[in-house]
Length: 185
Image (cartoon, rainbow, N blue to C red):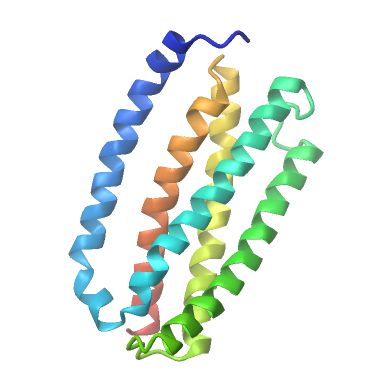
């Protein structure tokens, strides 16, 4: 595949336009629930971390899949062993990252004298559960986006990153608020 900037722009504009609109909707969800966030400020610190880690891991998975598809290292099959290894690695990496970051955020907030109104076990369980669900969903989206783009003759590198980061931001916010509500906060 020869890279042509005009083709990249032409194929990227529609997907970027759609993802911008979805990101605006995610921002509206966040704005509509800001009173919950002000009650427990530690979650204000957590949202960028939750969304960032989810988007980063999903994008890395997508980039690995795109490279693997381009080089023939990964076949365009859902049961490809190398694809499944990358998928599982992403989930494990996400689980470990969210667990570590949840504990760090809690203690940074604690020593920073930020009002928390939540205990460490509850906070870690909400963040790790949010992250785990987010990583699974974003990884699935990453796989299907990379495969779809490759099948259509599009460059998965141009498609995966915007779709995965948008999905990560939107899903991360929704799942976090659902879990906060489920815990009764």
